Amino acid sequence: MSPFDRYGIELEYALVDGETLAALPVADRLLAAVARTGDGAPEPWPSDVELGPLAVSNELVLHVVELKTAGPAPALEGLADHFQAGVRRLEEALSPLGGRLLPTAMHPWFDPATETLLWPHEASEIYRAYDRIFGCRGHGWSNLQSTHLNLPFAGDDELARLHAAIRLVLPILPALAASSPVVEGRPTGLADSRLEAYRTNSRRFASITGRVIPEPVYTRAAYEAEILGPIYRDLATLDPEGILRHEFANARGAIARFERGSIEIRLIDVQEAPRADLAVLAAVVGALKLLVAERWARRAEQAAWPVEPLAALLGRTIAEAERAPIEDPAYLAAFGFRGAPPVPAGDLWRHLAAEAGAAGTLDEAVFGPDLDVILTEGPLARRILEATGPHPAHERLHEVYTRLADCLQDGEMFRP
Image (tube, one colour):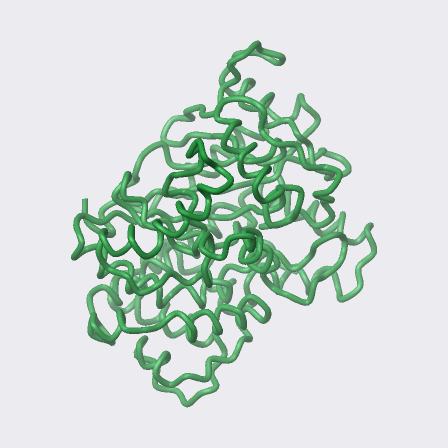
């Protein structure tokens, strides 16, 4: 299976009270209801339930579930409808439990110190190990909802081409997908608060996350020696049983999953509705296809980029999203952008979308209208802040996030 032959997509959502929008820790009861094993079913509780072309599974905490493709999908087109049907199926099962799904990458007033409840059933030893080593009662663990994109590769050559391209795109993903500007009941001043929490949640061992941007390694042997090896050695001191000695322990913004033969991109915030998620993914894939094809820069030039400048740019887009200035002409040239720096990151995405549309790597008829909302009105974080204002009262936040939950249920884009 080669890059762009198949797509694995995962969307995470918070479970909340249907009236108050407070976090509702009923993931086990929801999965049991979807599996038709009944409320209060005895052990073992289901942790992964198929929904036709999709599946729903548990996450670290009891107020989050993941909706995902049941297997690699051959195309992005049509997946928004499948995911929307999956959302509605979950909403139907949640209603008797008094709940609904909430989109965006962070719950806007969740208190991790008092509200965190870890998944207690199948594979709970993994979550207990994370909690013991890192302490999961923090936003960086228990209040993160993301979109994951898995792209396949076969062998070192495809790994190298795909990894080099992904590393270049990672720093500008928040400019397209940031959706987490509100935490603990107030705007944080960051467009992508999830990524700010994500990049510091494993600071006890710097090897776990690194600088979020992966190191420039392009063979399996080098990856295992330079990235996975230090992680496993550090964890061994507190995890002698090796519970976390797996590829998923790597928390960089994109991780090689050799057991799956794919690279998983983790830096995309979940959006207000699957149609928005798929529009974002289509833009990302369209740009990656052109990079892998060496449209603007040779493979060696892409591969040579060190971590530091990419990590610095990521820091700026975490804060400012589409308004973050890109000042490095070499970075702009890597994407064929001819404007003089500084260039807002949103302008670069408009360029990439236009290039991908013209080259046929982005289906503008399918994804163009929703992507246009994001490119012209800003990522969801910008639209949320326009709706809430700079100093929103709780009542205003409740109103705005109720509208966001309605967007998810109805499959609509959020417009302030």
